[in-house]
Image 1: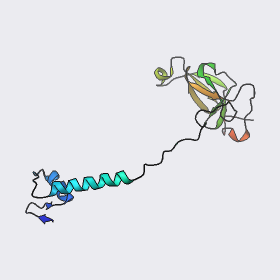
Image 2 (image 1 turned 90 degrees about the vertical axis):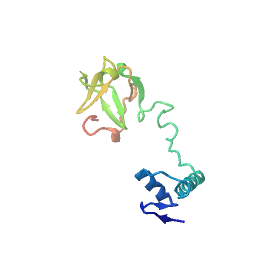
Image 3 (image 1 turned 45 degrees about the vertical axis):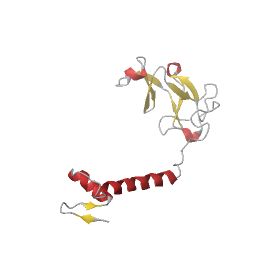
Length: 155
């Protein structure tokens, strides 16, 4: 039951309800727009209730918190313990620390006042004293050949 009045509103439909809202015209029970909106809302809720929930994307176990230290994943240490010669493991790449420079940047308050910059070839990383850094185990010093960064880690 749709009827169009002189105001141009398609009464009895959800579109008519939107037209009422857009033009700020009062709704009444005779035009049927309010009931059409109610029916459309109920249909949307029913459809949503019958849909299965979206699949949860969870990382495989051990990806974020490895159970054991390994050269591929690195040994976690605090930033203050990092020394020259350590090999940082970052996003699957290995970066040997050549030297430390003073940190100049806007993150000093977040990282701590003893923040320093680890220089590894042309790659640099800001290291806060309480940050957790992953390094190749110091007793092994093994870098797989495929894990070297292009110009930071040389065999």
